[in-house]
Image (cartoon, rainbow, N blue to C red):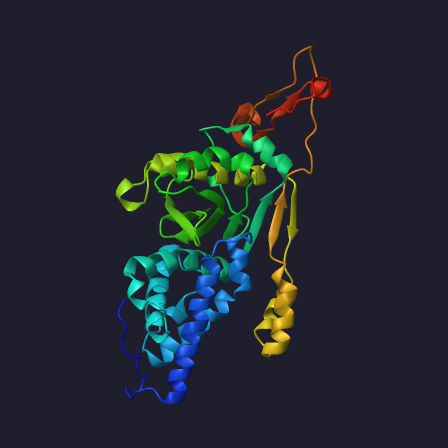
Amino acid sequence: MSNTALPISARGAPLTPAQTQQARQSARDFLEAVNTTQLTNRTLPPVRALQARLLHAWREWAHVLERYGNDPEPSGVHAGYVPTQTGRITWNMIGKAIPLCSLKDPEQITSETVFAMSIPTTVAALYLMRSHAVVEPTPALQSWLARTDVGDDIPASFFRLPLPAIFLKLGPELLEDVDAVFWRYLSHPCTTQGFYVFETPVDGGRELVFCAVGNSHLSTDVCQLLRVVIEDERASLVSAVRNIDPATTDGNIDDLIPMVELCAKVMLYLQTPNAIRIDEMRDDDATARLTRVRSKKASRIERKLASRYNRIIIGPAQFHGHSGGEVSPHWRRGHMRMQAHGPQMSLRKLIFIAPTLIRADRLNESGRDIH
């Protein structure tokens, strides 16, 4: 992208030196937060954005664009926006910030580069704008879910997020099969760090947006999105995905379905009667204070918050095996399905029959693990 002139003030006059400095600093702060958010490391993507103060930098740059650039759109972004709306605005904000910064190789910044930067920025910013949490299934629950089949008869109405925005953190046991096909369109190895999921009411139904974030072993995150509009809550979620027009999404629909099924397993577990859930929510008062204090005190609060983030831990701490019969230790697969109940079996409810470890007492005898 080529260098362009500075934006003009709302009054039509050139910016003063002080205003120019303010605009440049705000643009630099925004791009620094964008860059930190998308740089792959061991920290979860939404936590990276929190530590980089992405939302604060976003709002400051949005206000500059509104004041000096006659562009009120960025400052109007709020939690009710859908990701596609927010994505277009993010692309525009990054594009307007780049010319105000001294870049080493500005000619290397293309529209494709800006687009790649805008996706992780968009999902992280929208996540922080909304009520949000990282959802962390326990290792025991992940072992269960890896051995659980989901029935085709479960309506989409049972897929509900605990909050309008979540980041689903999963381990290799659940992700192994997904990674084998999900990122195969890339020319380099990639493993999944987790999934953003957003739920937004829209005309005629509700919109679900899934965003897988991959660790490509390069320098930045790679993302793949899927947008699903639920118009018929009685149909299954997977059937809604299969009805998506392939021209409206990146990648092969069949390759994206395992992501949806994984997220569905976790969310469906939360709808079962005996689901175990522990909410560990960050001190929102400390977050609010952060926006009101000066830099030195703010840095102390930031350090306090750096290791803390909203999370919901779900599932049992450990599983309990069931023994019976003289057979070798093995897993009996679990399943989630609808079960008839009530008068004349006229009602239906979601049940989760967990996988069962048969003859767990013989594990020590055999000296081997069961997978």
